[in-house]
Image 1 (cartoon, rainbow, N blue to C red):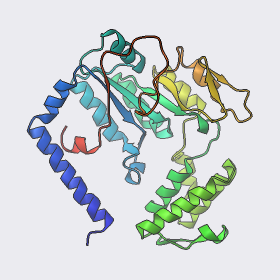
Image 2 (cartoon, helix red, strand yellow):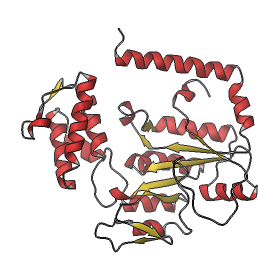
Image 3 (cartoon, rainbow, N blue to C red):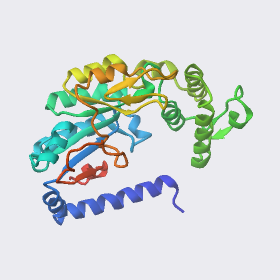
Image 4 (cartoon, one colour):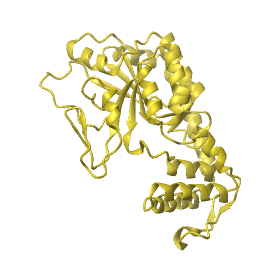
Length: 313
């Protein structure tokens, strides 16, 4: 009986074989021609050095991201800013095969790895900042703990100083037990203040025999700070808000900060000279209210799996 890792390898091999077959038969070229008048929006999340080994569907290695960007330039896909893309859809001036790059959340890796690549190649992008993390200087606890649990050589995790339901021991060699441990720890962390969540993450990392200070020094799984977001904007990139704290709301392009728990996102609006753009990288998001007629051409949201590059697409 195949275990989960073997099943993943088999699925990957099947996927690559199918993709290569589609390319050889010319279907990719047909699809490109058939969608030439639409808008391709490529949605990325995190760009980093090796965290993708834990969450390959969430994080992408910097060299892979660079290969994708160079592929687009080499194949002649016109990469346009998001606002100009929507304008072109509305008035029919969108170039054929037009492509938009969006990046979610605003992780440190995006600033450290993706921005230099975008600047070097002269590629515009829209960054959707997760405003709820601004000013907190705390890592994404769920991702950090999963990375530590999967990356450690430890067979078990015991947390004797924590409440009994999450104290363990947890068998980290068992996929189901590992996921249960992660779910329990994340659920528990949600009841803590930011300092408490950071302390919990440090406890988990150190109990697994890993170096917490190395995590801190590299800012693994942290979000950008305000200075880095400003640098992103200064490089000519578009800055948008991916979601607001539930107690904050957008009013005529400004943040209503009268709420008790409003987020420190005032400066994002100063980086966006026009009204916020629609969240095109979320297919389920509502389009902005406007009196203008709907675009003549549909927007095709294209999420390109990493396997396409392996297949030579």
